[in-house]
Image (cartoon, rainbow, N blue to C red; front, top):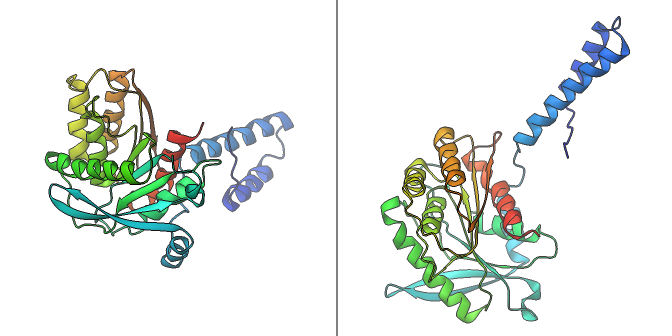
Length: 291
């Protein structure tokens, strides 16, 4: 359903139009108003301004009110620390889906420190839904590249094994990330081994051109496994990204018509890279989990 948002400028404009159109018939006046309102409605449907970023006090307050545990798992002989959010109902229901956030330090933008909290917030906004949220305990200073995505994927594969062994038996796992980390999520999907089936759902925000071009090639060259188990992908991008390449990526998924993939894309016309993820994380989680 369309939403009509009336700003002060729009109301002033309507008054001006009213004064200038006193001689027009009421029918023509009604038509003009409808045209103005429908136009405003479409603009607001396509542009979702972000108002969900957490300031440091809100971030601390949210974490203090939640149950967060730390744990240590092993990957390639190295001990790595992770952290996990446990819902209040976890004591009586430990068969919950798990959401794995890949979060590295930004290389070309202001470092976002609240991605873990924003994923939790997205979970809490879904009615009658509970999930574990898992990520690395620290935010490593890593510049992920397409040629090394397997190294990062392997770390999170080992993390899923640990979480499945110690926190949940649920096989529903979601991989989520933005920027280059979103690119790792994207290439993990397209290189999944049906026999291993690490993740079931994928949420990608503003993956860069370097990753998107690789994904386009994989789709167009029929390099993706045909017999995957059913999966979901939510792909989104902001004004900071290459619009043409992102659209080409979307087209490549639509043309591939993978029978195992439920795909949704979203473009945020009124938000840049540094401000989109709180909204896009929530939208992606809603797409994946809302029934």
